[in-house]
Amino acid sequence: MTAAKYVAIITDGNGRWASQRGLPTVEGHKAGADTLKARLRDAAELGIEELTVYSFSTENWSRPEDEVGGLMRMFGERITSETPELKAEGVRMRFIGRRGGVEASLVEQMDWAEAETAANDRIVLFVAFNYGGRAEIIDAARRYEGDSEEEFQRLLYAPEMHDPDLLIRTSGEQRLSNYLLWQCAYSELVFRDELWPDFDRAALEASLREYETRQRRFGSRQ
Image (cartoon, rainbow, N blue to C red; front, side, top):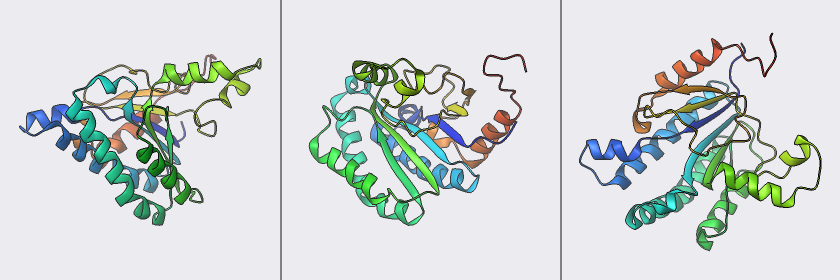
């Protein structure tokens, strides 16, 4: 099997990582954001062309108010501080998910980051924010008037996104959690025990090696 070019990750375990260390939950999210930045650089070096990460789901609004508020503040701060750096490193940023219900200032920051990095082509970072796989399919279905998968795909949040070759989930959980339900129909799945802040380059490389041992048939008998 060829190397994975398109990789999606469910970055799970930030809260448990913080709890194990007696830290506030938001500190786990900050550590997770640091890990994402480091693994994004690794992914680019390893030849990955698209990396998609689950940042905040449509269901996460039900979490404690202080955790959600801390996440929103951190998200905005990271976009502001890190976009220039990512731009210089050739990263293109794209945010997928519903913009409705998100604070206008944060939506403006997301739009700005996308515009700032639009010309980059070293690696694309898709950030699934206020995202749900079912919501994406419903939103596309409301506008769909065609009769083919290709026409339907053009109505998804990021029609230019490739279907992930590989989906990685950290923290030992083994479920999709409403993530990229359309796109991951034939993705290979790798589940890792590390909590996301502990997911280092060696873990990423091991996941990519495991992918290379798989035989993808896409429903055929080859």
